[in-house]
Image (cartoon, rainbow, N blue to C red):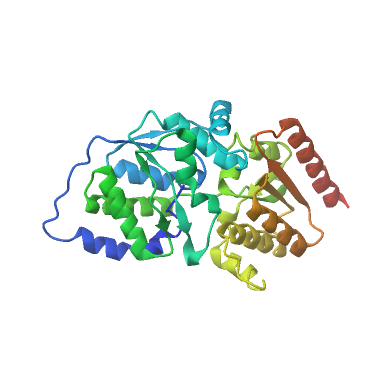
Length: 330
């Protein structure tokens, strides 16, 4: 959901241990605060980290339910029309939680590893949500620069103050969350299917079953397994982007372009399915660059928004499966 990318290298286990071993540390018990965690955007990727961190702080946490039609409708009614589907869904989760918690945790990600950026809407997400939900107070909204160790630690300090707990307790919880996330299985790699495709896109489009209308299950029903970019090592992605005229500064661009190029070049997949939010600028660039560089290779683009019909998606997936079968025969 927010500050969990590449975090081990930013803060460092050793530096955390130094703080925790300081003498005469007084641990204050967290006050009775209910914190709300909207179940949208990057929560789909970093749920393990978030859950471990909150549990270790002994703070009552309220999670929104899985995305459904009610959540989407609330998001559409509270979000600006120009926003993409994932942003509208996140607004719906925030509306669902706004009267059930004392604090609403809204990510404001400014920079990622190596100063890479993600969608600029993340920078203004708290303001968008506060405007849409009419909640002006009780929102954790300060910025996070994940490429700066000092800024990450400052974020944790401010977070512990908001949650009413000791800073060292927050650091201890953070350390355990880092370990838990590092041990968790990430991404998908199906190996027992006749065809394997690279399922590309932002994680919240891939893992939100309501938003993508159970896309992975549909692919499985046609004998198509998937692999996601998390299963490709970062050094392999970096190698694939070296030939570009300029290093891309979008994190999701690097992940999807680099992983896609690597999998195609090494003949590990039979095709690519790219699920993209309608009007997503980053995806529009990534898709065109990837298509131009992989040549004559099966590539299906699925655009989704709140008006997307499931029948149309089913037809396109069926046609794509038929194409893969014909390529195998001929």
